[in-house]
Image (cartoon, rainbow, N blue to C red):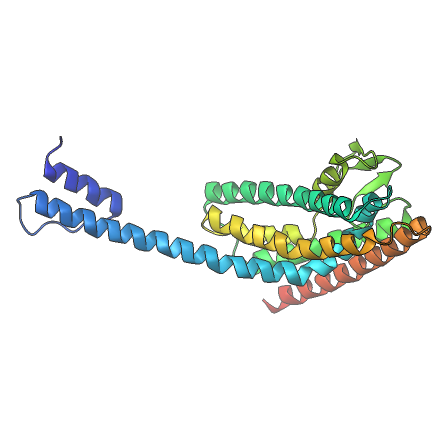
Length: 281
């Protein structure tokens, strides 16, 4: 068993207690005082991390609720394609919507982890105003690009997912994935592919990943995902009762046109806000 002095010095180095002892004698009593003192310091540090994590949950939830309507309208044609591929019950509609949202969550976690590790390696994150302006400009440019391309090209959805027949092309790549209608894995794959394009949730993940704690960022992302998925699940349940309608094709096309148009207008608004913030700052 090591000497009490050596044990006390090791405890001081671990918890950051650099104050030397008043006496040169290190007995069991002095060692017990150091253990209690350093334990309190660690508990206070852990408590602040827990408080920060719980504070990030309502922030992520409110952001998801505020942006969930736009995300649902923009990506609704992709989801409706799966819902209307065959006659589905309410349980099937819930399964499709959950798998689609689960695919988005997987991409959010992967993006957040990569950005968190990168920021740890660089140790010099971008200033908050510059990061916010650059994200806004990038988001606006991508949304305008996708919307004008979707209006000119048939088969392109407003999520930035270009489809031709059964093949869905991954954004920014020439590669395609074959999606067979009615399969359980199709909504999950479509959720992953649609989240690979730059959209509002990815920008939110960029802001959450700047947190100093990975657990805090994960809690905020889960809360954001729950808030933004409420609308897609509600829309899926609403359309589950309308699956027997014979206007499947025209209905999907109309909703797709509305989603593309709203995406383009929102992209112009983001570009305007980003440019105005750039000149102001």
